[in-house]
Image (cartoon, rainbow, N blue to C red; front, side, top):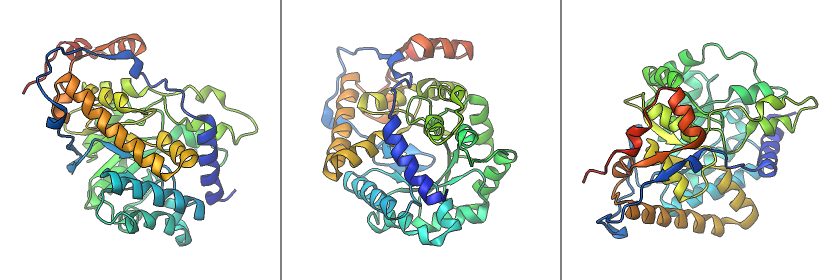
Length: 353
């Protein structure tokens, strides 16, 4: 099967398998503030991720590219929506365009329609520094995402089976390029040990890409004759992954993604320690089923609802939202306790103004 055909299959299977919303955010409860002492118009949504100052913690995460005219249209719409709403947007893996220049259009379109926006390039951990520079130049990217997808590759019939040397390659890329390097998982989460190694390797932001969103094990199993079903429920839920990294790894930005579908998910991700939140499958479904205008409206609604949640908590900035007290229960509490994270650190803090 060609890489382009596989890209289209991924889109179709992603829409078919959907998202189960078992990302762990139902275990997170905000402590109600009866005296928030602020107003919605005081809320400042600016945030800093990996050295980039962004107007919003919300962005459109990596989805697709390299699938011919269909992915050109999708990326054009996603990037146009990002420009209209003032949020960043990431492209899917650009390796297909590096290996087949005829696929470049499906990536270059994002900068063509979004000339002043913040764009994230994307490659896998098999990439070389020269390939990374090519990907960045292709869309004049402001940052480079390097995705980690070991389980997806293992379940993928034609996937990779050798994952040695990935950290060294990531370190070499971080040293060679002149934009910040972010590393993201694709639905299986990142633990604190991996996050610490990545931070030491020069990575500026870690996108947890936790379990609970688009499930690439299930997607690849849709393409197999003999299923590897044991991987369908594999991974660290998004909430637990964010909190685990935030509690132990310093000097690296955290991005929450993996099943995030609304403003409350975003607020909880930030309260657990993230500086931003990526949404992918949820936005793609709206675009495909309801169209461009519905996507733009949803993004604007999410932005406005996030401001309301922050106002209810008395958090006038993303930094203050990161100080909002939350009660952690259920599996997330159990996971963090087993990993020696003090959950009371989240429940007994206060917002400092």
